[in-house]
Amino acid sequence: MLSITRIALAATAVVFLGAVSSPASANEAEDKATCAEADARYKELFGDQKLPPNTVVVTTYNYRFCPPSITVKAGTTVRWINVDKRTSHSVWLKEAGKEESTRFFPEESWEIMFDEPGKYPYLCGPHWDQEKMIGTVTVE
Ligand SMILES: [Cu+2]
Picture 1 (cartoon, helix red, strand yellow):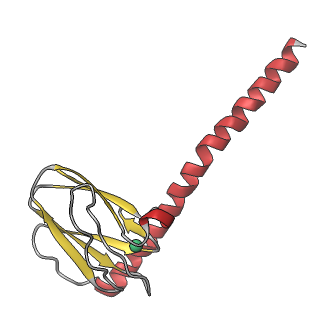
Picture 2: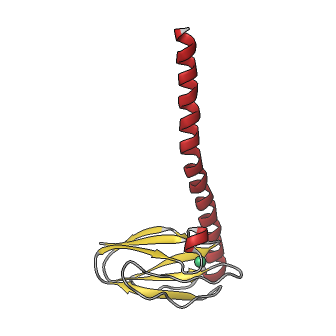
Picture 3: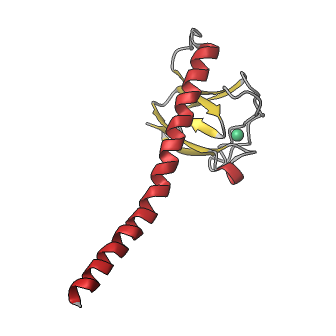
């Protein structure tokens, strides 16, 4: 009697853990795959483009910012480049009290220089709500 209860509890624990951990890792794997595609698109489109000094690139692709989180030094310009085929995106540093950027279309970009250390979460205006297209810039 006792051992049956133990087995049942153990089985419940496994099912519970599985339910909690698998959706998160599935999303993470999906995001990684999306960003790998975005990197390939970027290389195809802009592979030999020289960036100005102190500039880093974040791509927008398939409703994701790639990479979604970056850490930069104060004085760095972040350039968001759209490597999608037909969707436009924006960058909205809403928590920092900024206005939403203009929408940038495939192969277009938008950029801003970060000179104040801090954590800057941002959204894509048209896609943050439905698609959870969000990112963070941490400035050191
Ligand atoms: Cu978007």
